[in-house]
Image (cartoon, rainbow, N blue to C red; front, side, top):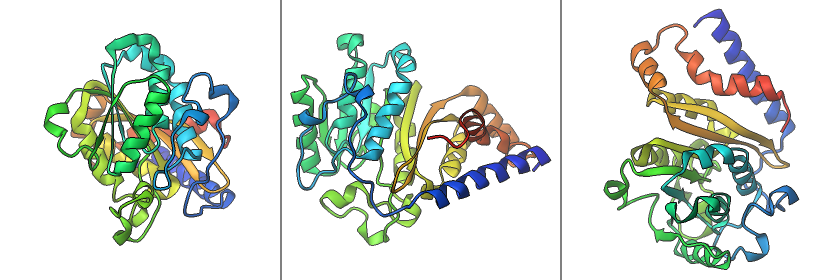
Length: 286
């Protein structure tokens, strides 16, 4: 590793350490209120359906939607034909995305999945309350859809189960399935990423929430090795957790560099760049 990359790694580790000490990381995100700036461009909280066994919009939901709003111009330019949410819960995020892209008209279709049947029904109710159509399917991640959707999805949004929990809590029924992430909160994330990579179109992009404990830098490195560029769209330190919204997209240059550089000196600079540039521009602000 070069001296420059060593300094970059130290800066990253220092920033993560700083966030750890400034945030009280507990087990679950708290339910929050949406900022007024987003209310006209997203799902309306009073119209979001609820169920005792379905995850309600919380800080992480709002962070993901805020990141999508910040990238709205890029999304409109992309003109996606098919958008997918994995783990739709209450339907707040997929409904908000559809509202943001409403000006694209009927050319964009929406699909949402959740392993929780109650979440499927709740999402459908939220969509209907906002006058939006989407297909909502009860399945584990995208099980049964892989072949039909391979290379067809232009936008994927995911608020995954990211909370570190005992492994036996993964896959249990009910609301706990929305947060139980197993070891380091990564066991479900590490199943979602390869599944989503197969679904993304050549122009497709993935927006995903990650907790500090999930090692977002490591996630970027992993995706970089598969030919995906990455960017930190948003960092938010709440009362209970440090959240990152990561964006990934296929990049021929990244794919070429990943295949050629391997473990060569300087090869880490490409996957450090989303964190390096983000912190250079934003410092420690939320």
